Image: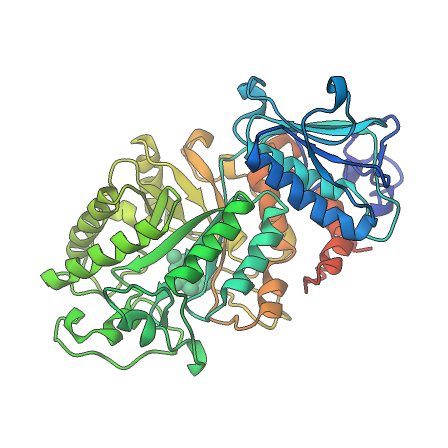
Length: 515
Ligand code: TNX
């Protein structure tokens, strides 16, 4: 039995129900190709997880999988090295095949095959095996039932290389453990980038030892007057390592030259008038600016970017650049020139919000688009021009990808300046064809954004993020031909019991037929 039908628009009998979906049709994000068929692989007390001899990284992937399955299955699931006697060993087999066709699997793709003797995961890279493992976990039933991987085969690879989620820990502080929980959920849906918005008017969240008051004073506030908080360098390293184990790259954002009130409140010398303002705990935007004319400002920016770059193994440094309404256009361009040079000096690629296109984006700078349907055509034209001159874009259209927009009038946390974003709206756009005159090849990927002016707790965060983060994960991974709301809503519904089992307080969106 193939899964090639489009269950949402059957000609007769009306839309299918979730219960009718085969296990390979339930996968989210939808894979490039999947056929169910034949008897599957049943886990037994004798099942082993096999990883290539001598490969520590793949062994760790196998060990984490075994850990995840031991509890629910009750089996010991030892992790063993090598293919077994004569290459014939069965079980759960993780294989690296560096010679596999890169045109099919890319850097992150995989194949999965489930048959009575073995369920075999094959990829060119450890990242591909990690994603295969996430698929395997979705093929296994929710904990408590018989552990059988249904028979079938999958070939899968992502549409976009950059599949991101942005979390604002500046407006309200969140701990490393809280962010780890978010990363863990997202990685299960093949998100591979966490963009951390670390600084804003209301708080500075990362310790910079050469400017200790940033975190010590500028971190001790947040929206609404709460205590705030900040991460030590060790905290940040711990989060980066946790994310890396899940093949998630961290992109730190230090927002400049606007959104800097917490820094200005921490150091009088950063202000043009030499006076430090009081800390700010409201929710206005666009009122603060670093002092572009002062040389001391660039010593500060240099120290901060150098220290953040040194802490970050990833390729990117995000320097914000949005809503600099308190900075003149000429000052903005002059400031961003110098900031971009520093990012390059410290070996990183610039990412900035799309306003950078009004100035002089450095060669190779990546622009993150956060406009919406009413964004002026001139802004979009500038982005098309940037794409033509070699800049890649990350798409976070606010009226689809902003997880802080309310679902509807009844949503308690959240804003609505870009409109309401019910789940079908979050899902219903094609990133490869979204901006006029921007070809898919210029789109590095997409990113959800969770701003936290109105989000102070994990339950509120999860209510806004889930299930929309899953919808956006599918847009980032699945081929355009698989994007289809009538079937996506069923895939979402199928994730409901899994989200519940993991304790996620997701929004039971009325458009989704939750079981
Ligand atoms: C706009 S989008 C902002 C943020 C706010 C957000 C609230 C962008 C680059 N800047 O400062 O938190 O709206 O939705």
